[in-house]
Structures are given as structure tokens and as C-alpha cells.
Image (cartoon, rainbow, N blue to C red; front, side, top):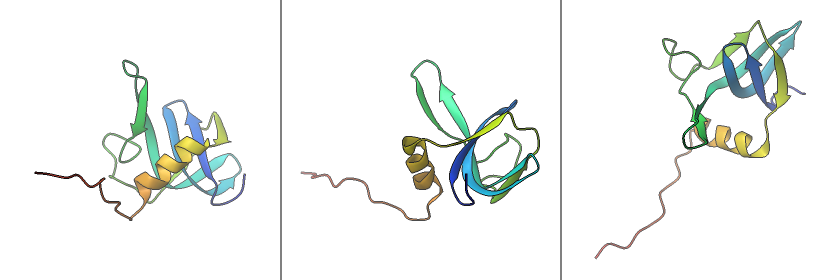
Length: 98
């Protein structure tokens, strides 16, 4: 994996997605990290607006020290992460109201 790749980091506390900033001696630093949330009833998943319930919303960077493994994020998750962290606002589909 290379710097700026979108990766998934699995830790004992959860699963996170972000842009790889640094991989140094077992410490993984991600830019724009997001925690993965899932709903077992619907099978859907999404992103939290950060990495901890009491942490800062939308942190710019985080370093993980206890990592189980790191893997490139799949294309669907990578695209969803890019949309979630993008500053570009896309308009809703136009509707015709009478």
C-alpha cells in the first residue's frame, strides 16, 4: 500500500477507513478517518462523523497504534468514503412538482 491509498484499518475497537498518511513501525496514520457503522437488521453500513463517540467530529488525522490488520478498501467503500469526505455538494435528482 502506498501513501494516499484509501485503506481499511481493523483494530480491536472497530473498523476504520481513510487515506493512508503514514505506516511507521506498526503505527498507521489516516487522513479523514471514518469509523464504519453497520446495521445488522438491514445489512447496511455507513460512516460515523469521526472515530470515537466522544471524539472530535470529522478529525483531519488519527494514528492507530494497536492494529489487527490493514487492507486496501474495496471500490464500493472507497467511493463512498470519497463522497463522505468530499467538500463538493452534489444536487439531488430534480423532481417535477405540479
